[in-house]
Amino acid sequence: MSAVRAPVVVVAAVELPSERLDIEERILGQVGATVLDLRDRPLASIRAELVVADAVMTEGIERLDAETIRSLKRCRVISIYAVGTDRIDVAAAEECGIAVANVPDYCTTEVAEHTMALILAVWRKLPRAERVARSGTLALDELLPLHRLQGKTLGLLGLGRIAREVAVRGKAFGLRVIAHDPFVETAAAENLGVEVCSFDDLLAASDVLSLHVPLSNDTRDCIDSRALARMPKGAFLVNAGRGGVVDETALLDALSSGHLAGAALDVLTSEPVDPAHPLLALENVIVTPHMAYYSEEALVALRVATSENALAVLRRP
Image 1 (spheres, rainbow, N blue to C red):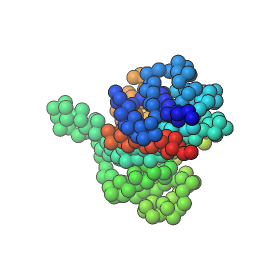
Image 2: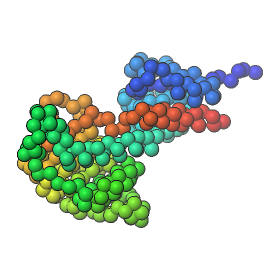
Image 3: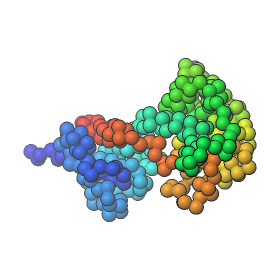
């Protein structure tokens, strides 16, 4: 009687700021799995390892396309270090009988916190205020006008996990919170104290518009010149979601003309951002380096959940 073969788990096409995959090894060790750390190699160079993998754990830095997935002769699960599955050809995986698992609640708290930080920073003009303070003066002239945030309207495009957390935080700051999301039941929004409205009404009423929709054919460039023109003069745009949702040329025009008072962006269409990007030259724009998702706690939780997703499938008979 032949010995039972220990599972092989390949970790590839993922960036993890950890020298060792100790969390992954500990969890997958429960089924005696061998974890192959191939993070530093492109997919094209590890085809032999992929062929014998019982599980692949990846972020999708390199897309797992249909050809790659069909080469996974033994694979039972692709476990993703991410919220979404857009970097995996899910249809090809289903065709091959390979389960695809993600971590939908990853970094919800972090992105909600960062969104609120962006709202407060752009509303209170903190980067410019810091420059004034560092200049050795207390002159507020170039920061005016400044307005109270309490009582203003925070509009949320999308009302998923992260947006709901932003809504709770916004309400705590005394904001009226409204949202547009055709996939969310009105009663669920009302339980949060959030008013549901149409897309056009959302744009027209938002003093601050925060974006929380996935990037798809339906949402790409949905914040275009028409949408921005619908927003109140002096409004602010905040995006810690997906860069491609915003037409950046239209946003530049709206900011340069003074129609929008400012924007705070953790994501842009192309990343890392070109230092010569015209949005970076505007003083009423805050840009952070796609960091909203990150905290030490979130990283550990992501690694645990991704490993446990793979483990659950490998444990099946």
